[in-house]
Length: 459
Image (cartoon, rainbow, N blue to C red; front, side, top):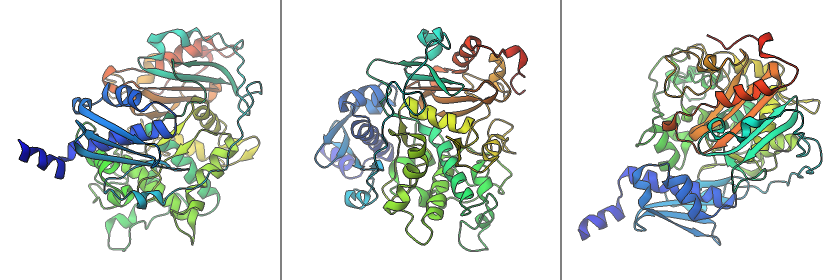
């Protein structure tokens, strides 16, 4: 028995290491970014919805060193994460905390909007515009809902917060972060530093991956081998929790299909996109220095007033644009409204004209479900959609599109109705929750415009 324990301590199985690093990372981000209690995060966010193995993990927070460690029964697994200003928490699978600390910056504070100032500059809501009784119905907001925000015609018309959460609480968007990455790439296209036809991201003309274009990466059609399965040690869990350099890990993957011929949803693809835009933004400088790491804060979050937004970097300075952005529900709504306005904010065009429309166009190999710019054309499918657009069952307008993230995160954007609905929480996919019912109920409450005048969802 003693020998087995020693072996676990020295060389724990990979699944145990994934669980320990995942636990350390989630606790770290929620303690140092969201200001939540470590043990509550461990119980509610990690253990309650997670793998049975996680129930035996223990965490230790070092407020002085700004680190979190996690171990099975307090002994095995050696999970470790460190907080850095500006770039949040990073898993440190190789134990080199000082290396991981290098990738940080001091963000310029974004002045909070006054409570009584009109949204989006402030936080004032006009609850008289739309009687949103749907937000008081748990069967619509869904199990584990933590925040719902509704923006109609550019105004905050309704919100819901679970106990312990409010309009200042940063919440993890998981894969909704992918769409933010697409917007950052759009800014660099507008700057003339990138183009959708750009390729050559792998050295050597003889490497078949050399032909992969930015457009193919953006539409999840690169052809790279990648397993996005969760619950075990797969490409995505290895990348997020066992690799200090996530972009280099993904870049090492071989081609499984000819570029552009096959659609494969891949968080690794978006981490590669993050490295691409970081290098483009850096120019002759470093892709991981403070000037580059602060690009999203300075160029996107500050103009939009997203004062709670934090885009986290890994242990080698790659911004984890696939998965790790925290922001309050209202700040997520500001980003959704930014897309609805075609990348224009307060009269200033931040994205190329037509770029958001391009993002919404179907990725050729996706069967219609996914766009060309890291967003979804269909909402969550629930138990099954039979390969058809699940929005059709809820009669959502044809121009509806989505940002979607793990555990029930979603932003619904409907340009024809000037509507943005943010729904954040902790709702495992096994519960088959679909936010479309909530959105449909909100649509029925909207004044003036009627669904009868709008085209229905895509077939």
